[in-house]
Image 1 (cartoon, helix red, strand yellow):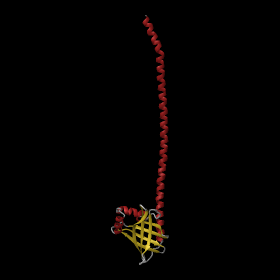
Image 2 (cartoon, helix red, strand yellow):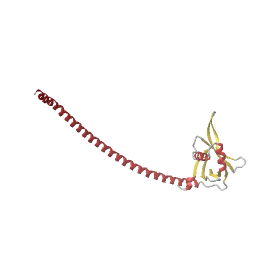
Image 3 (cartoon, rainbow, N blue to C red):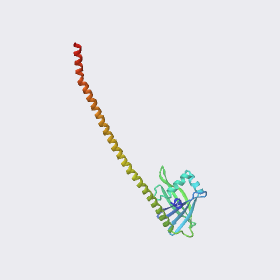
Image 4 (cartoon, helix red, strand yellow):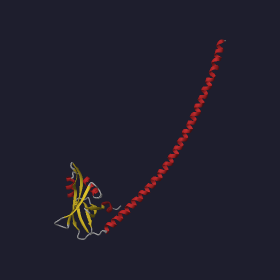
Length: 219
């Protein structure tokens, strides 16, 4: 997957009945955390979530900056999450300015409440970006995912082959083990029978030995 796909994501949001496609390009430099592009019908809006906004909202939410960024990535990639609400509002005094916000659910003593976890200001683009970019991006991402799936399938085939070999070797080991156990048991039985026969011979000879001693004593 190329560098652009690694740092770019596109998610569809349903905000108060308004279908928005949001493209995020993660910058993670000294001035900006990510760039946002909102596709709203035939119009597009652009803005930046700056390092200053990062400090502001991470402090307000009592999260470290790294944890805050991690949560933002999750919230802005899972538009169907039940723990987050989204809002897109155009300024009343300036119809070319708006804000996109995400609100996290918190459990209060009186019940769950949603508080702003973050918000980014955006402005209306003079020249709207074509939605063809979305199609190109998704096609490229789909191709990358297919390649990843093919790679995983090949690895799975290798693992399956290794598993079959292991099972075959295990079956051979079990057969050898069973054969050795049968052989050892047979030898043990033979040895036991031989000892029994030897004991029997000794027991049979004991009376004769006793009688011969008694006769010798009489003389």
